[in-house]
Amino acid sequence: MIQQFKDKFVVLVVDDNPDSLGMINMTLDEVGMTVLVALNGQQALSVLDQVEPDVILLDAVMPVMDGFECAHKIRQTLPLTPIIFMTGLSEEEDIVKAFEAGGTDYIVKPIKPQEMLARIRQHSNHASMLTEARQALDSARQHVFCIDEQGNILWTTPEAQQLIDQYKSNRRDTNQQLNEQLNSWLQNGMAGYDLALAMADHLLTVRYFKQAREREFLLKIQSPNAAVDPAVLEEDLHITSREAEVLLWIAHGKTNREIAEILEMSPRTVNKHLEQMYPKIGADNRTAAASIAIQSILGGRLGRPVNL
View 1 (spheres, rainbow, N blue to C red):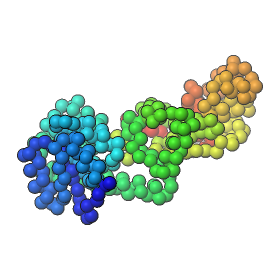
View 2: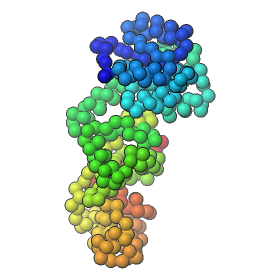
View 3: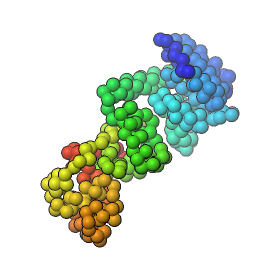
View 4: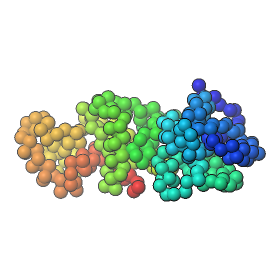
């Protein structure tokens, strides 16, 4: 059970070096912060089962469990808590590894006390604003969730989680499969299209909302009305009625063979309609066509993910 230190700013320090621990504890105590100590990553996880700190100072190289593995595990339960690595490793690959593990920032040893305090305050303030924003989204019942640059879902509002659960259940997808879709879309997002998640009877769309902080992105998930008249696409995209029917089913994730059966035509005819339609709507592939159709249905602008 998570315990709270009322009116106390709590820092968890994870380090196996007595000299570092002594200096850090004295510095933080002087400014009124409560210090909790763990000597390795495994001990840190045990502490976090009982206490949720405001900031975690994490040594990179330790016995039993190093800081990189520890950070990765922490991020599974504490997506917003700042993790500041403390390391004597200053090579670029080590710094990148720290960020990939879930680190928020890093300090190169030997630690300068005032620099450490400045970074703690900066990241704790940022984390507080994100927490307040998340609570506001929850209370406003927004379909918003947050991912990292690998497509891993860090947190969701209850409404967004409900839609995500519906999608995974409908498609029988795992978390990993959904993460891979989000990762691929984000990395190739300069095409400017929303991500289409097709279900059996309707569509979900994911739109880039804003960057939460470095390497973290807020997204909106939406569920448009499934009962869409193809005439909407015909009028908006200036295509024929038959092309609009084909495009609508493309947007629902149907294959050419499935569309042929629904519309009582041959798969070859479906493909011919697609070839004629693509240049009209400015699409060069099936995914782009589906996204354009969804935007027409939603009546909104294309959501452009950030350029990573």
